[in-house]
Structures are given as structure tokens and as C-alpha cells.
Image 1 (cartoon, rainbow, N blue to C red):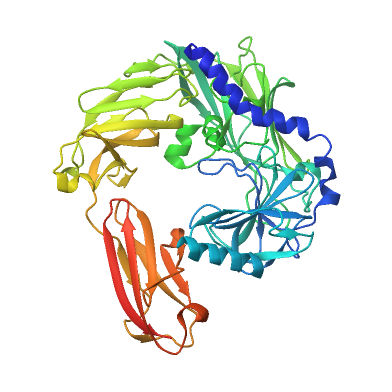
Image 2 (cartoon, rainbow, N blue to C red):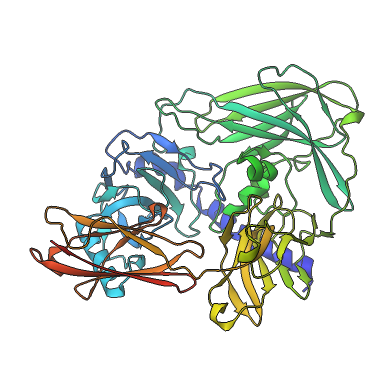
Length: 574
């Protein structure tokens, strides 16, 4: 099978869940408003909605406010049964998954805790496995629920930036999250049209098969009547947000449309994104702005390897050509989830000065639909098929590390590719390094920023080369981590903690990151809760397991990803 045939098969496997979803959706989704109740007993106010452009994925649910504090009661939105319970220091934190007879699964993320029967079951599993993080599949008969049953409390667990409920409805068969507001579920008052915040025009050309782009104009939205010069082929990048009444949050739009002379030439609609496809968000954005300024501008140009092209309707793949040098009108129409629209008009004309000039070639061109290898004595690189969405220049060079860091690195500092080109499947790096046996297990591949900050991306030995995978082009080398994690207690040794409900530690690691932790009280494993975003480890006193009114001996063992261990021992009275 040739490379092109393999890539067609690759695309077909990715698109299958979306087509399956579409075939099964026709009847069920329209019944949402009568089938489901709210998961909350308070009015719904959104701090985030479906389809938002997050750091490396599309937001797949709705974030519901709970008043800024944890503890709001949560309820099953329909009859069904719990199929999965997940506890994690990151991601959705404490999460519950309930399957319903209509082919939909509801998801409740960042919970504080679960209903008593469920929480007791989870705790037993955690002690049985001696692990805080657990992912528990549940048989249908274990926890059946009726609509309105109490299932737990909303919180701030996992990778949450504040107390809220992350709520999803998924197609059970495909596990593809749904934009349920499109079917009239949980409506909120919204008479505010979307707002265009940024608009940029880019010239486009091909040079040796590699796309070249040039910023033509960043439009001053306060004085948008000036004529905008464009090149023979151009596209636009748009920043926008939506607001809803009673909420200060910036929310995603339902639809972006672009017209030239009243002819629609581009439409973007937010739609379902199956698991594993969220990183293709970067193919929709003007990625250099994301890298440099953390700005999320939707570009009209649809790159050929973007497997989510179904979200866009454009016969020209979002690249526009004017037939002459006369003045034309470009119109942008923005639409939110509730049909409110905003319209913006601009004057454009093709001008010779706006053409994209040829640029010096760097390295060699890579074809987006193929896999690629780079091999040298000191560095091996593998880019799998599907890692790119467009042809790009690829180059590798040794660079000089900052003087203050040179002694910390154990391999050359390599610049690999252009950091402003996103990757959609991980690139494999192998770096040759010479280390004594005593340091081999302490070695990691590190990414080095332009400011000199370096972060671990892990590493495993393959002969005398250290191997790691990454989703980013950039600068890479090898460093070692010989420093154990740091443990700081929130109480003094021997403290009398009677009258308190829990103890807390802070745990941090300098480079390779926390791999594992184990806590023991009086020689027995104890359930310590890890909150990764706050580097916090805590234990809630459990009289049934440790007793009360006496002195207790505590031992905490924290290990990093280079197997450096810190053992902290203390005592307390409770």
C-alpha cells in the first residue's frame, strides 16, 4: 500500500465516528429539552461553552457557575446508570459518567465528591489499589439512577481554574461530545450579538510547493473604512467572542461567515470533535499568533491535512482571489448559539504592493501527507504520517546554549523545525549523549525556550540515544535530574491537630515532575488526595482507619520521573 493510500485510510478511520454520529442523531437530539433536566438546582450561568478555542483542544462541554464556592449539589439529568467513575489529579478530576437509554451519556467533571454510596465505593477501590487516581468501569446494576437523583457535589478538582461544573452530553456509541444548545437544551437569556475583536488580512502564495504567508493588514476596528490592499490570493483571520446576559465570560460563537460582494465564500460551524482530534484546533488558528501572543484567531484558509475540514464550507478552501483591481466589499457575519448576529463590512482591492515575495528556503520541504526521517550521528527524528497539515520547510541546526545553562546540558542544543508550525501527531526525537552509568536513569530530554527556561519532555534509552516524543518543534537537548522532590508540611512535627479535619503538604519537583506518592499512617497506606494544579497533597482524617485521641506516625514518599525519592517522616496527635 502506497503512502497516499495509507493516508486516505488514515483519514477514513478518523472520520468514521463523525459519520456514525450523524446517522444516529436525527430523532434523539430533538427530544433533548423534554428528556433532560438541569444537573443543578440553581439558574444556569455559563463561564464556558461548547467549541471554545482552548490551549490545545476545542472545549467539549459547558462550564456552569456554582457561585464561586465548592459544594453545589448535582443531580442526574435523566434515568440511567453510572458506567464510569474517574478520579485524577488533573483533567476532569473527580468525574462521573452516566449512560442513558436514549443513546446519550452525561458527564459531570471537576466534582468535589460523589453521593455517599458512590463515594464509599470509590474510597474502597482506592484503598484496594493503594492509589488516589482510579478509573473505575461500573456494571449497569451497580449504581442505577433516576432523573433528579443526587449524585454528588460540584467542585474544583483536576485541571480546573475555579469552582464550576463541567457538563457534557456525548453520543454513547462514538463518545463524541455534543453541542446540546443547538437542540434547545438548557436555554439561557441571550440578546447580545457577538463582537469582532481582531481582523487580519494575509497574503498567500506557493513556493516550491510550500505555502508562504504575509501579514498584509491588521485592521483598526475603530477606523475600518480605509481601503485594504490584498494580494492575488489572500485569506482573513478573525478574533471574536460572544457574551450572554448576566455573564462576563467570553464565549465561543456558533458560526463565522465571510462574503465577497454578497457571495458567501466561507462558513465555519462548530461541530462535534471526536476523542483524539482536539489538537486539530491548531490547524484552524493563525498559529504563529498563538505561539507569540497567545491569541486565538480563526483563519479562513483550510490546510489540506486538516481532518476536520467538515467544519468549514468553502469551495476555495478559504483562500480568496479578486478578479480585478477594482474595489470590492468583504463582509463578515458572526452568529452565536441563540441566533444573534453581528455584521462587519470592509473595502478591499487587489494591489501589486501586497503580493507575497519569494522567501529564502530553509532546510528542505516536507510533504504533509508523508512520514519523514532525519538521521545523523547525534540526532534522529521521525515525523509520522499525519503529523503535518501542510507542506513546510524543515531544518535542523546546532545552536549555542545560554552560557549560564551550558554546564547543565549533556548533549548539543538542537533547533528542530519552526516552532510556529504545529504538529498533530507526536514527533520522535533521539539524542545521542555520553553519560556515566550513575546518571543514565536521571537523564531527560528537555525543551529549551528562547528565554533559557527548560522543561522535561521525558526520555527512555534506546541504545546510547535518549528518546522522547513531543508535539512541538523547538530547541532540544539532554539534562539530568538528580534532585529529589521537595516536601513541605503545613504543620510542625508533633503538632496537636485535634479539632482539625485534615493535614496538607506541598510537593514540587525541579525538572522531571512528580511520578508517584505514597502516604502511610502508623505503617498503613493512607488515602492522600493530590491536587496537581496547586502542588497540594492532603489527607482527611478517617477515624475508622487510624483511630483518634492518640499520637500517629506519618511517612510520606514522593518519587519523581527520574526515580529520585524524598521520604518525609513526622508525627502528630489527633
